[in-house]
Length: 116
View 1 (cartoon, rainbow, N blue to C red):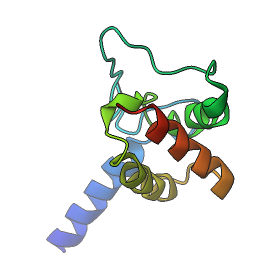
View 2: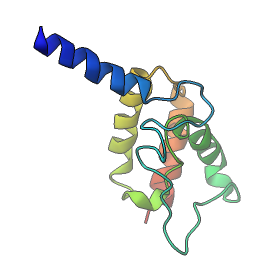
View 3: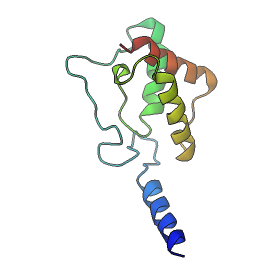
């Protein structure tokens, strides 16, 4: 009984901390799981690089459902595919809008192509 109660409480806390309104809410409330991460002196590559326009735009839509838009330099180009796969699991868990395969590929290309 005690384990069941703990499970219910933890589940409730996890689910209630997710903003389900799809307006850029934060998965963990407040500043979000990642918060407003900034790398001094750098702005995330914007839509000016035509090779990554669709990936950048889709990342803004998809990633900000739960947290601030990550900067590509937060991970290496070899780390980004695994990070994005992990985030796909969060999207499913929290019932957020999942990008299709083409959109997902464009997000991966944006982050891999712009990471240092």
